[in-house]
Length: 261
Image (tube, rainbow, N blue to C red):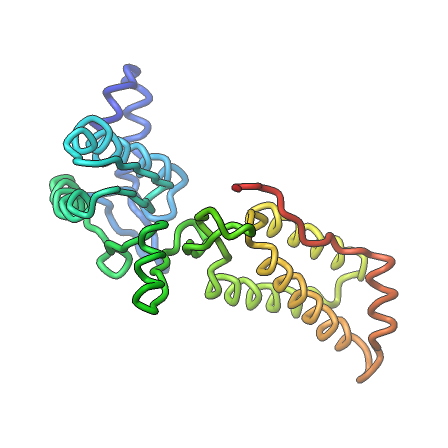
């Protein structure tokens, strides 16, 4: 509430926000008071959490820690997930310690299993190649980031591909949806599938990730063939009929929407 008061002068609005925080939660019909933090699942919780991290982390890095770094550094945050890049290893190690202490001052903790220091970049790739190892990778915002080079073989690039575990989970959810929706009219099913694929391409269609989104589209077609075929007697949907269905209700082709290189 103190952070909000920096920018919001209207006390009535502040009272409304405070009511959100003190409203409590109901689980399995049992009411529980909320005496700290933001209510999980509350409509205002993501916004308040973002504002809280802006003051506790973003401004601390921008106005304080960055100015003490030996080399170049950059901070990238989305919601409660962030990556910090440092040119000097000493800055990275010092940030890990001071960042954790800073968050603890405001009742926040890091997730140890998701927090690590790793060597990344063109020098890291050359060193790993000399050792006969692979460079480390990291996951951020649904993508696995890895070290690679351009097609010409002359320039270093950051490669990105869809996190395999997330795609597996997404295909599992698609399978469950299709199994429940298979009794709907074919046109409605195909329209929904097309929209789902467009949404997938719009997010995951970035430079270097064409293979992953193509594999996802292939798996979606396989599931379609399987579950639409179960609407009739065994063998009622042949490959020829499936191709005719796809020609009548075409699905969007994989496409790169965002060029990062």
